[in-house]
Length: 213
Image (cartoon, rainbow, N blue to C red; front, side, top):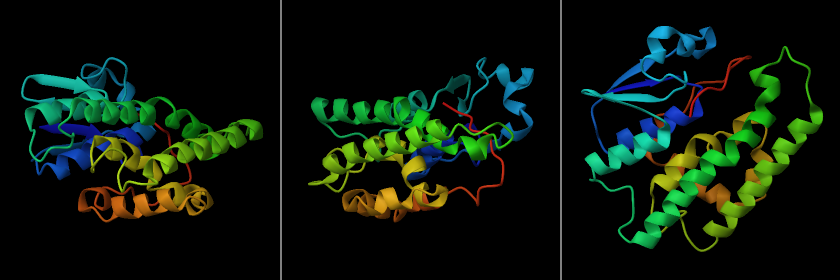
């Protein structure tokens, strides 16, 4: 297997975590999104929409992090990253979608001054991004009040959130975590897992571009 990724892209990290949790061998191919390699014709043959991650496995080429995670779980079911019951699996997929649909737009709004520092800063948009992240953390805190993980046990639900929540302190949002002890403890548990800690991004450069899906 070959995974196309970039160190500062959130969504590929989900796949890197899952691959490590399952102990699978794979090759990592870094796509230089800062230079626009994901938009080049060669890469668009892998993903016509020019986003990472992309996973190739033999003759199969698959994009979109959630689709890749589901594929890995079906093809390599052990160790399992989904609970056994249908209702629990549905809840995991709910959180996977929430982590993809609702949190990233707020994240990008908050990160806009770092992602595109040459553009005028929309202070209101940045503030809304912070507020929306805080509200999302409230939802997670309520879920984590009586459970160490989002659904039953450590699963793809937690993995999908890990790339963002584990770096909130690095992007000026540590106080949001500190104000929510359940979330802080959950993040600590996440960081204790080798698959999570070993995929942590390097120090963020002055200018990055968020890419991925």
